Image 1 (tube, one colour):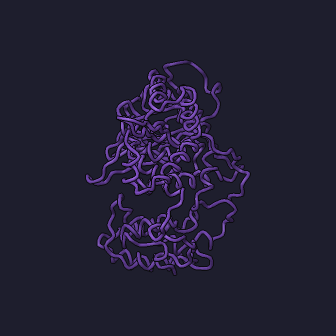
Image 2 (cartoon, helix red, strand yellow):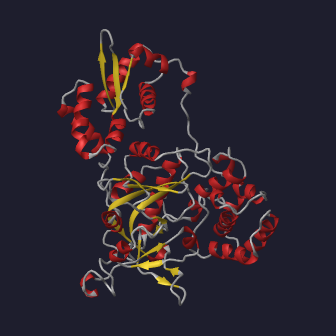
Image 3 (cartoon, rainbow, N blue to C red):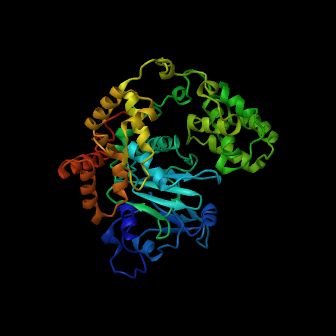
Length: 495
């Protein structure tokens, strides 16, 4: 556990307690200035901010398995609000000292939803970044993507690190949210589940990546606020020259009265805050906003109290935020108005694309489409203990409705791309042996290190390849997860 804590927290905390250390009489001057984190002994205590400020690794190891939640990213300082030193303060974005990890909360909210840690790994393989740690929680999982070096938050950089890191974190959530139940509402750099001996599903310390690698990946995603976007309010609002309060989504939410205070469904607090931000970004005065939203709040089946309502509006007008987030707007409208709403139903100005003719309307398929079909076919074996398939070409052709010559062509292309292994056996008992190399990497992750050499040998034998070639291909795919173009953080104008 000490190795895990050190890997996540980096150099953020002192090694020993400032006072009353049981390990060494080292003085405070020897370790220099470090930061603080917050830890909580139960979820109930976390909700009430009843926790402890921890400034040393010694304090963490003394309390092993006694905390349920913590802040894995380090703050400049931590303090208490009350004289009894029970209510913590200081866990705010502007107090962040360094960002050590991104994390995602996979929240299974109903008994009908099912997922395993294998689902996370399967999605991660295509992402190209593997989780360092996966934790099992009461209602799902939490995945940590630990940085190999901390990203420091400095005044000199005008706190750009937080803005960029938040964009990366949002894109990471968006990626996994396409296929898994991701909690999109939790704070990007706030409180998370703490690794314990009783909740760790998977830990691979070699899966850490640089901030620059994450940045290079994120810049390829379409929803990032960079590169080359200036801090222009009309752009942030999502439409050039159009106020957020004039967009369709605003009216849709304002006409919805059956909004309740359920956190998992992003309830009334989130809705009111988003509506207030829309007013703020549209140039509406705070008093006029309060008047408009007071009527809306009064019509809700479960309205906020007057004090709570005013706090939400004040927060929106605090100057910390610029406008309502498109991601949140879409989540709120789908949760409370209509799940089938599209961007065109919510926003005035849209991007338009010319789409190619649908595959179903074409006589022939493209090679890349057959490749995708084969890989999708193999994907069902990602979580199998034995990812290797032994079947016949005829069975694959019938399953995928692919012509014989096209199948031969696409299999050779995928092998050349180092996406699959396959070998064709003739004669009685023959057929085709096939496996996705990503599926093999997935299985390899779960094989103990002392058994991996034997595993490589079995693969080589199964596909009638040399051991050296087999290892080279698999290690190449595995290492390729970390080979992303290096890019200095501030080489790009991120606004």
